[in-house]
Image (cartoon, rainbow, N blue to C red):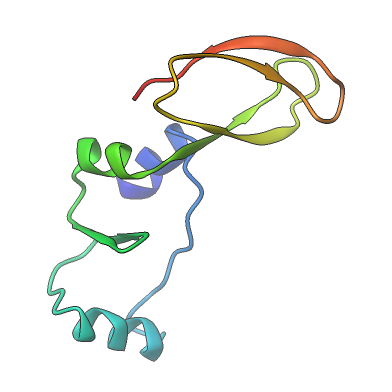
Length: 98
């Protein structure tokens, strides 16, 4: 469910499996995190799939150009944006959700 949510909202992430990644496991222990999934967003931690909290903490979304499908980062919390694709120069409006 967490991967689906992140993908649906175009949030890039690095998945770490604490069963095989000892450094990731030690990071959770150091931060006294006992539940999964756990999301480290900057210095903030979200334990469990708290969708609203995750969306509040993430400062960008990855979107695709409507014309050429080039992926690009756009900020959140800025209202209506005019986006120009760096690849094909296509311009389109985007309503930021947060």
